[in-house]
Length: 213
Image (cartoon, rainbow, N blue to C red; front, side, top):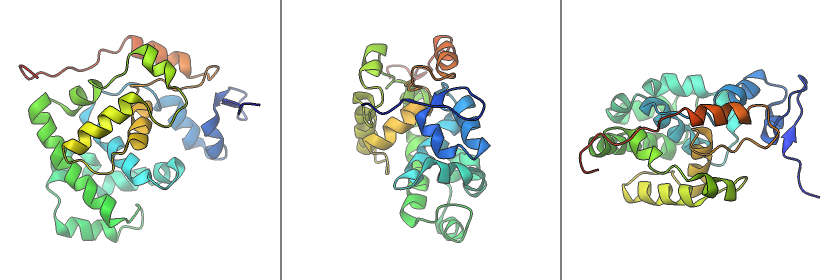
């Protein structure tokens, strides 16, 4: 028998089964209902999620979500230029911040990736234009639903690594694509799936403003 795709919380409205991990914590359902899968074209939010997905490696999303405000405070709200300017003293400050995940390699990777993001903006006009160039066609999206990797996440991971980014493996990038709306992986029957579909239909993906890009 296949694993059930839906979870029925106390309000009687079916959600994706991963919501069961936060059934006793309202912010978890709120994240699912208002953020996960909705299309995002803001560079700061995209960089934040890329960074937090890297921190999540080996941990649960609930752990990261509970610490998100502390991460935002520690990493200058994930403003790319501000983080790119961090130096050794900022690394030491963050290593002493009990509100975040104190992993030196991941902290240094966020700073390094901010500098990589700056270069991407120069090339593409925005981080968003680059990210949305990896949006899979609907048929490909459907074929790889409920998997931990996809051709789109593999391509994005490979290209980011080529550009020097760190903590951007294909599984991590698949979770990123799901959460930022490039893939609608809300389960059939989830009360949020149709709303995500409506927003994606009306969403105009950003394109590179750089001539010849």
